[in-house]
Length: 300
Image (cartoon, rainbow, N blue to C red; front, side, top):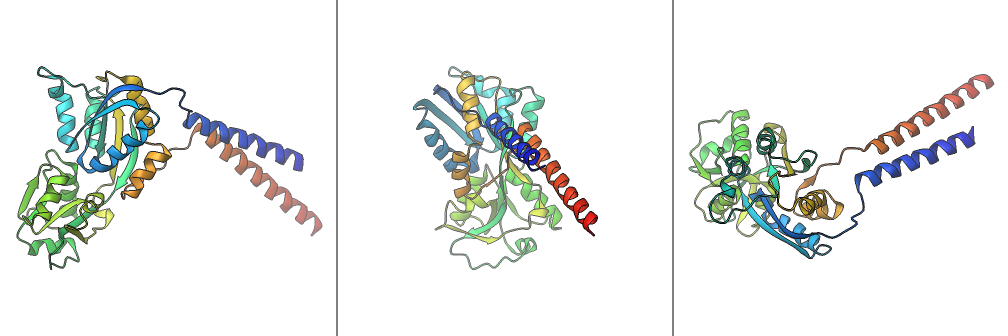
């Protein structure tokens, strides 16, 4: 019995190892050429850091970034405005916040199948200027303010999440809102004392610690989960490098950079090999417990 149990554990270990190998293939070659990325404005600093990390093993890759509101960027790709003019720039990777922009690109058949992935989570924060004396202990306290800035919901997912927050807090349509072009514009409006408060992602608030402060963190059940995802686009002119960097975004090295900035990595789904391993170990443990129970019953 012990020999069979050890054999099963060895088999499970092999299966688990196979699952890991399948999930994280070793990079056999370096890549080169330009990679054009359209990304959420809230990724501005961290994405550049991840790109610098990637270039250590792929020095011949160059990155071109266009940061902005994810909905607006997705609309540009769907309408093909990035491919117009005398200097068209095909987009290789789209790195979005919120599922909706990626969904719209998928429906428009703009994504390469099998490259879409969820990577990060974030949360909302109500911020005020660093020198503000306002006390905000609930979302309803925003009703006492003169001006509140949010991203324009037509092009900025953060604005959509803010609207959800207002609706679930019973204050929709009751605020004097200033609409920003993206979350970084909202951050600027608050830091410059143009508005009394603003709603951004928690990671954005941390980029200006000397100019803004988090006055209140709304409960996460008052808005939809904030998910960042990426995919490679069909219009890419450098598919091999784009696919490799897209995969790198989920690597432990990249995720550690995002985590330091306040993002929460989304766990990767278990691979087939890993699932088999867990199943084998679980089955053998159940059999071992059952065998001990039978032996004990015989003695009693």
